Image (cartoon, rainbow, N blue to C red; front, side, top):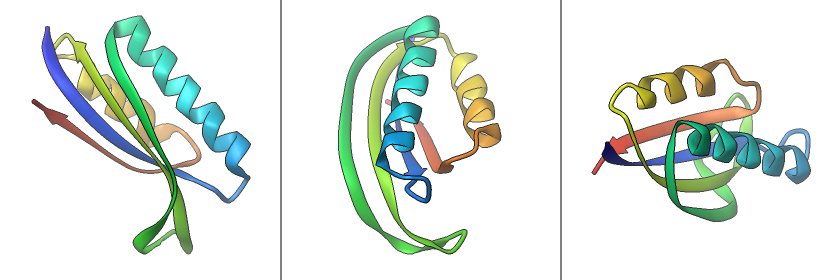
Length: 92
């Protein structure tokens, strides 16, 4: 098991409740495939540049331990999920 951290930026186009639902969805996905150490919700912040014509996003930092194959699966799920603007997964 390796340690990872990922920052996800969720869309606020459909409201903050939808973004919080996505936070819980990815939290459950990480817990099902590894050990979730912490979830740090940064909340609504202004983006450095517009992404899909949106200027604000909901930022969340996840710290977790998982098998080396899981980050690729997490990235794949994030890329096909509506409401996810950006993700970055880093091995610690």
